[in-house]
Image (cartoon, rainbow, N blue to C red; front, top):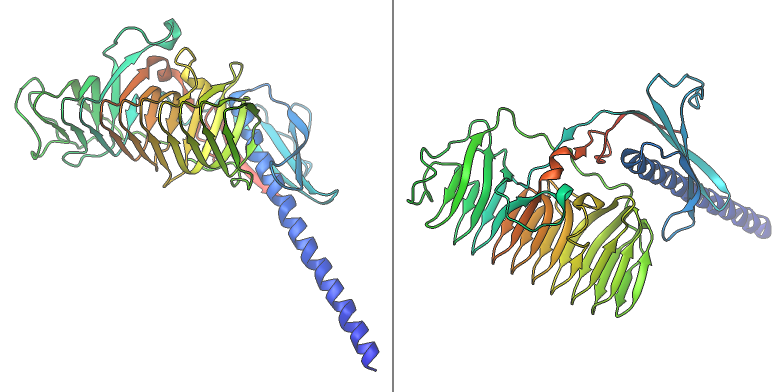
Length: 396
């Protein structure tokens, strides 16, 4: 009798274990399908001819996914016709040949949530100790001559939301929230610190002009295209080409040279130190999503100033931090409307910066690329850049 009972219990235990493993595989397959879908939407937003991809493995796990882009005479998996002018993106996720799950989205190309980026956007923006903003146009070549077309935008109307202190200068215009308060005479040499104006400037600081927005600037939120992975990449004194995928931390030290292939990357952290040199592909954008922290220190360079800033796009999740200091250079778009951005100690950025709180100090400078007035930031539910509207999603 005891043997029969023991056998029955052992059989139940094996069955429960199989059920638990199946549940894990089910969840892993769904994660792979969801991640594949969002990555496909990212690719389609930047490349309208994207047609899908064969089986790809997530960066550090057993999960695989494949993607199809259905159009024309094709039908959606439920048999419905694909509406005219739309595409259906279908991603399938799988774990070790079993537990197939699918995730799909009906999208309409050619619609945009936001067109054009300012030089700097923040709910709170502070310049101090010789920092500044000016502009150039990458369509006519790399940064050479000073242009006075830098743009700073805030939706805030609170007094002192924008502060120009300690010998800072803004070669361009400032736009504040529709009900903000502007000083009557920007050419006046008196300080406005502590007064009821949205823009505060101390002695010896200046900007060219200011205006009230008609409506607040609407900025799509950043959603990570899948969670960061578990793989750490740490490099020093060696060259490497990194491929798109989901990672935990990228750390580059000691003058190492790294090239990022075009595509979508998800990191928990990025840290570049000691003269690290990061090059990006020249044929399509490198899009980096950061969940926690992005730091450039001690002379690190990320993308060449001779490149167009659109080739490097850094997207910061809400609550993430971007820190750049020590003579570093980044050429690209830094976009995180819910993130904190700090540049200091002669840090330089060519492109555009969007954050919730933006601080420039210690001769930090942003050189706004005027070509970014035509850059499209899409309104899709993934928060992805590009002209793509997600009409609905489904899983099965």
